[in-house]
Length: 237
Image (cartoon, rainbow, N blue to C red; front, side):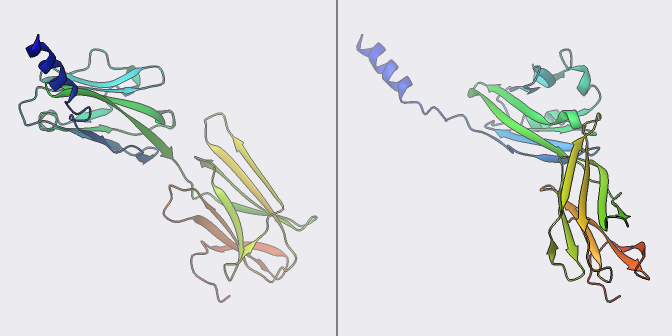
């Protein structure tokens, strides 16, 4: 009886988090590019791991590793021929899974499951996807003296800003963000102008971009709108 009590106490003293698993929780991928999910776990090279990656929405299985080999028998069709994994790395505690040619619908929450003789754990990972476009077009309505900055193919919808040639922000008069049938955003931002001698820069950016996409326009002869450059440097025109 004393032996059983001691055994129970020893089990209760085992740390809950003794089995360590770590994942990059919020990776982001540009649509059309590859992304690698990176998870590591305790393994001394002889732990005989079983691993599974699954998208939570619909319980879609990306990849399974069990009995010392990859198992694609339950893989969802969305991930067929899009998964790359180094099996040798899994045996050393590195479950790095590459998802190829990321789609818009790949965004979402994923679960990483790992089981070894040292423990079992599930870790959640959220994948964000993004897209931008170089096709920023500015149109001028001479009747209302309004410049319209339009572009499509964005995800998520970008923040839009009008600036003058010195980089000062100009207040926009109207903004429309429409999500199209393909899931991408079409964004229009209007600016009512007063000074046709000024230069106007339309800048669009979302949080995943290192630099904004933008275009600069001026009026030639005070009447004809022309595109000058991408507005990255101050203009001396």
